[in-house]
Length: 254
Image 1 (cartoon, rainbow, N blue to C red):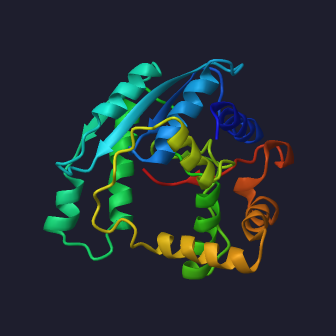
Image 2: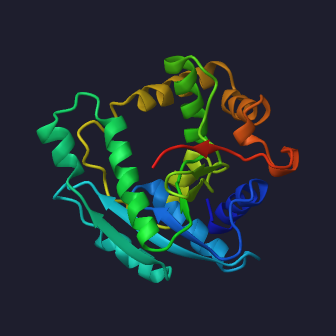
């Protein structure tokens, strides 16, 4: 995927769900993975011509794995004219050494989000951007359906009450295959995730399940995505379909 196509998909999502307003300062969560690095390019490129003017901050929450090196990410941010901050934490030590969590993903995500939110607020950001893509949307909905018994998915736009910050997901129209293509085309400086449970999660199981079902039923992914947009999830309704006074999604989380 070329940059022009990435910017087209990103702008469509931003426009469809009115993700960006004039004067926004957006914190980009940069894990060092292909998704967040692609979003760096997307929001940096969109900033050059989008009619609503906004600023960017790139933030990496380092979980404390000693072997991680984010110097190449820092160089990319410098090239894109985005200020970059690494937040050092002891999350890995707390989860794996002290607490010895057998199912660490939920606690890890909560701690990383907390550190990210705090730094974003400290830097004066009013919005945060997460790099969830098209496939993440489908996988999250199926995980909720299978493991929780409800038809649910994260929202394109979510206001976090306790943090007084708005979360946006500009890559929801970009497929993971295109992200991989963009990574290869632009030689993104991906930092490999050293987490010991990476690749052994429920999400990975759902990802493989979707691949298997798609072979038996071509077009499955597109139908699932369409169901999320059209089957009554208020947080996925586009602004023109919302009654006056309604919000996309609200989260009572810090």
